[in-house]
Image 1 (tube, rainbow, N blue to C red):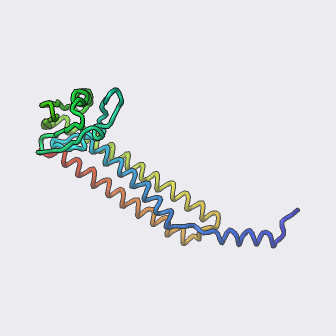
Image 2: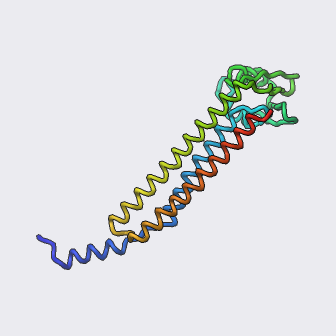
Image 3: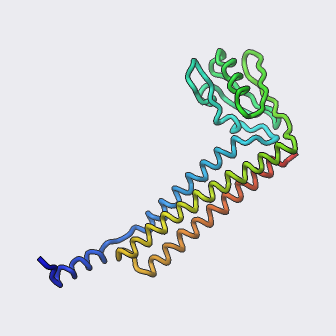
Length: 205
């Protein structure tokens, strides 16, 4: 049976009554971008500088009783001075396993122990290694910028679909798109700042 004018008008009114929670959309965009920044922090923390930083060992996995286990689950890691890391295993029998994991990693570190704790002296970086690490930082930062811009794209596409469906006015759409762009700009600036600070740490002699 053909639609009546009344049915079509009811459908139009129903569409107009649909609402978009713009605050929720913007909050979701921020949350996704924040996750990308958290990932960047973890990745940069694993890049060595000339200073001792416990975060350097955050990703280290140890074969503890044959099971791959994060180092920070079986030991405390501290930095008693700018050139040394101190690893205090909760189970002293794990010391050989921890040392082996450090030696097999790509960190370029040499551990030593006194039967109670493991000490690692952080050697100064060569000029060549500094350049390699700075390049790595730039690459990680750019990957994070791309991830943040992908979040922007996805949320802008969502908003445009809502406007097309009649759930947003053109003015509301323009305001929402501007808000998403502003959030994106803020996160890109934060990425730049994080990368610049990490680069400065690497280049510090």
